[in-house]
Amino acid sequence: MNDSPAQIKRELLRRKRAQQSLHSYALSIQIPLAPNPPFEELDEDAFGPARFFMPHHIAVMLDVLQRTVTRPMGRAMLMFPPGAAKSTYTDVVLPSWIMAKVPKSRLILTSYATPLAERQSRRCQQVCRSPEYVNLWDDPLSLTRDAAGDWALSNESELIAAGLLAGITGNRATGFIIDDPVKGRQDADSPQFQASTVEAYQDDLLTRVLPGAWGILVMTRWNENDLAGSILPEDYNGQSGMVLCRDGLYWEVLNVPAKAEHPDDPLGRKIGDYLWTEYFPVEHWQMFERGESRAAQRTWSSLYQQRPVPQGNTSLDRSKIHWDDPKNFPPRKQLRVALMTDFAVTEKASADWTEHAVFGIDAQGEAWLLDTWSGQVTPDKGIDALLAMAQRNGVRTVFDEKGVIHNSVGPALNKAMREKRIYLDVRPQSSNADKVSKVQGFIAIANTGIVHFPNRGKDKIWAEQGIAQVEAMPAGKHDDKADVLGLLGRVIDQILDAPQAPPERKPGIRPFTAEWVEYSEDNQKPKLRYR
Image 1 (tube, rainbow, N blue to C red):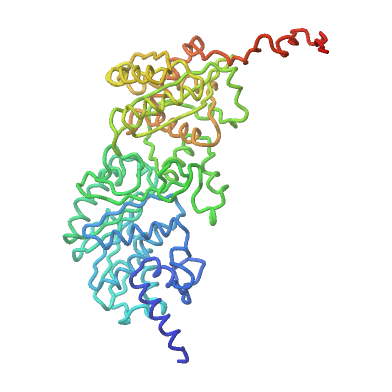
Image 2 (image 1 turned 30 degrees about the horizontal axis):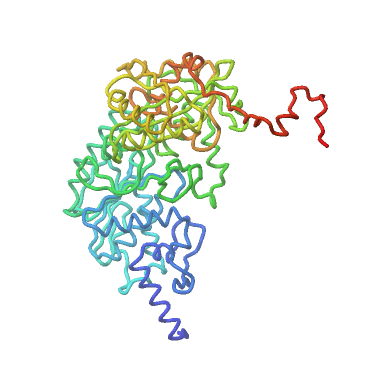
């Protein structure tokens, strides 16, 4: 051995970091099927933390995983689109690390079927047999039992792999991982399968864990009634972070859609940015995003955007909706504009959303989406946003629904209009308790091909979410944007007669000036001359 003392010190420090940090560990091993070799020479003091040498979404994922397995009764829910490497790092990298780091760990790895769980289990074994792995730990480790579904390390850590519905047996676990409990759309939409999955989780899996055990659920979401939906609160609306769930526990939710659509994106992306474009070109994601059939759009919304859409009872034909470049929209002066709104009355993470949308109707009666705003805010903030939006778009007419919300928000809106000297004609529309009936007017105009949405930007995302809510009725959990679209369908004829902002007046000519003396409506008339 010819290593210098400095090299030996650097190597020992690298191993220590790998034992303490899941990020450093992930770069120190050969991950099965990964194209890159381990960073055995990485000097984090010289080149920076390990997280800088991996895709950002994986670094954030490892943050969540390490926090979860190191806190009592830690719970994490990871929702990513297909291909984001979530299974590799959760099923293979994490178990091999925690089993060595914490002797006598007992883990359960499960999926929708035993063969899939055992395949990931074998990949985890492959890591544990590698020389890079063996050399990381102070006491060399080896496998003492190596069946795919039941194996152990020499430090008495164990892992059991089985299908969730196959029944979980064996010693009680210190942690569990559920990866992809749903095979596909058919199972996801089956009420019987939904119930069986929840029962297996509650009756079989949770009864096999020790007090204080941690748990991780990894999945892409097909249906709002899937296992994640049974755990998340009823009014969950896609937020990441610590979420108090229906089991009384705080789950750290990491919800990463293929295309960012929230201003508080957990990866810090801007709205409209795609995931992992260093590996997946934008065209890869757009191939799924641009599918026109209802099935294709459901796949994009559910699997890729983590917005599960149940089968609804509406007859909306997506192919009749136009998606146009905003640069090609008619000039504003050729449109009759109005604002549709649906107010929420509380401010909290679980509240409904306040939604505003401005539509313009052209001379042919076609509708164009011009501006949108969404927020989980108190009514006063929603009113401020409405007035600013109306002023920005030259709106004089607002449509909302009659009922409790209109009655509670109306006085505050009138007061705000007086204070800001922005006066609007607010026209409440009759409410209908039947959700599907509310959107029939919008479906009718959309299916006749007279609805135009922008093909990019925040308003495109708003429109996609609204359409998904319309399609999910009456089974969907959220209908705020759908209610706004429903208003458009019910009032489109009224918009043509609604008051509009007066045309912009050109400044007049000041009397008795040279410009006033020289002015003439006859451009050919010679100007006066002065000596």
